[in-house]
Structure formats: C-alpha cells, structure tokens
Image (cartoon, rainbow, N blue to C red):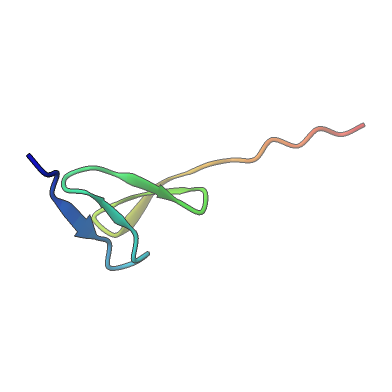
Length: 44
C-alpha cells in the first residue's frame, strides 16, 4: 500500500493526507500555521 501524498498550497511541501507538517519552524495544517517553534536563546 502506497501512502497518499498531498502538496500544501501555501508551502509547496509534500505531506501525508490529514496530517500536519513542519516547514521552516512552523507547523502547517490545511495551509495554515497552527504552531510556531520558538528558538531558545541563552544569554552569557
């Protein structure tokens, strides 16, 4: 069985149907950002 792939209209990334996917530090679902990854910085 071959998994079905979809192309996100916003990012152009291929991903599995009905799944969110990461692209450039953001989690996309149905072409919309649902979560952004925060980069932790440490101050010395």
